[in-house]
Amino acid sequence: MHPASTSGRAGFRTLLQVSLFHSLIVSSSLAEDVLETRYQYYQEDHGRVRVDSEYSLFSTDLSDTMVLDGTFLYSAISGASPTGLPSYNGEHVPLVDLEDERMAATLGLTTQLGRHSLKTGVSYSNESDYLSLGASVSDTISFNSKNTELVLGFAYASDTIGANGSPLEETKDTFDWLVGVNQILGPGTLLTVNAGLGLKQGFLTDPYKRVLINDEVYHENRPDRKVEQLLYVQLTQDLKSINASADISYRLGHNDHGMLSHTMSVALNKYFFNKRLLVRPSFRYYRQSEADYYAEEFTGDPEYYSADYRVSAEETFNLGLQMRVQLIPDRLALDLGYERYLTRGTDGHTPQSAYPDAHSFTAGFHVQF
Image (cartoon, rainbow, N blue to C red):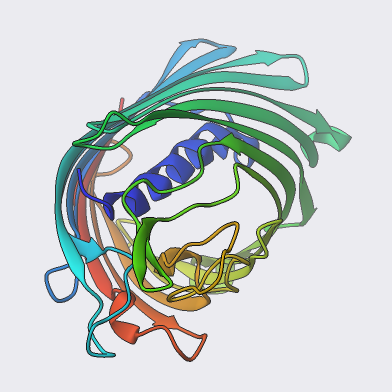
């Protein structure tokens, strides 16, 4: 596998963590068994990274107090991505081809014990040069006639990192803690507040990325420890007058590598034709500052150094539209979606060609038994 696939890999590891913590935000039990399958086509502009993914999800009631759920993902990755070296002409950054496959899965068991909803989960993700194994546990505790929920969660992942064509075999450990509150504020109004703390230690460097130091090419080198903090707030409001609901959220992220990020999103869930059609337009804005060790190229004798645009100062605009069509009401639904990503560097000196715009299409089915 080639350098740049690490971007997608990092994104999917985040997806795994989010899926394991999903029950912390929403109800952990479902009224019916659910099976969902989707295909996603992701393509960056100008022949950059392409990802074809097949994703499946299931949830089944084992008893009145126990729910089993799981996910499976297969992705084929190809295309090209920046090496980290500066552009030769001041415009286009050098690219290298990549190709790989990824398989990943999660499995979770939720048990209702009085006012406690206890969930345990495991995760697995494998590529030709990366293996991740994880476990998580969470407890959602109901208070105040179920109008208030306290959420406590912990997740751990052990990763093994390699590099094609080399004997590299390094390890990384990730620990994540989460505390949250779900509060019903009134009829149709739900407030969610989560605070998280994360610790990564071990090999945090991308083994494929290169940097230019004193006109010589080196592998990048990042600190072997990172502490991250996050704060997430979401307000969901039922809009009965227009047969819809709205979600507004904000996420603040910070780590001790010098990066501060802000994510703001808004989405409208609008029903049509007696709830036979659900349309969800959405908008998300993301902005981050650069890491302390980021630059296009270096001089002297720096301790840490990376020219990876993913740790530079950047902003992303995400426009999305999802639809769910009830082919058989409450039994079979068709899901369709499109998203457009527009990314820009904000440091004033990194070439804009380093930042890929992209679009993705999704299609799948949702079945309830």
